[in-house]
Length: 268
Image 1 (cartoon, rainbow, N blue to C red):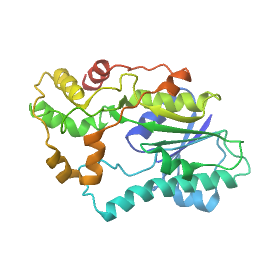
Image 2: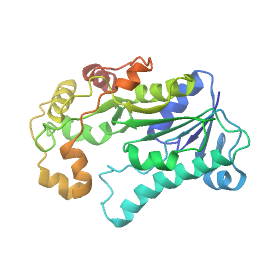
Image 3: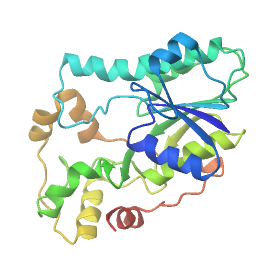
Image 4: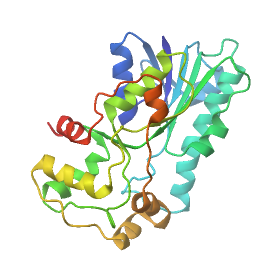
């Protein structure tokens, strides 16, 4: 299949592109910078949607980037980076003389982006994948955790009782590939592991054990709020219990359903 991926140069996009190409699909990226196998967002706006079978949007600023201060400018950048790219692709699909078979977006928050992603009519199958914390080598949440945990300074965030929905990068890429290949898949799917009812404290213990380090030093709520700002801190301190019932019902089989095996693979 011919797959157009918006924002496909990042951590998730790289893993997805590798899997798609390994399965024989042709991948074209939409990026800010031109290059081989890419079109730019300006080219998309000017020339319209290239002929493709599936459109996937992964574009968006990382809302939990600890290196970025949470202020009005960054808040606007987070929103615009997701909403504008989603709307640009949705409009291009609507105007296309040969619309794609499927339109897939990945988001941590369903309600806002569903509205921006809705395509009139029923010729294009639509899927929204709601992702948990993505774990993998060379990027994602683990890259910010390894140093303190390796130094024996890791531990739960706040009380540690909040749920910590997670997914291995291979399974997120797998769910997206499954969604584009299987015509029966549509609607909202939870991109989390089946064992995603893990609490933050349990995750910290598992990561410490995988590294052979203690993980008992909690990160106080006040520090989390100071680093991330009150709005973002809520995401880390309150958590959310998420179960992938519909994802499993579509027939997707997880490569890493359990946290221990996922961490072992990532840290190998």
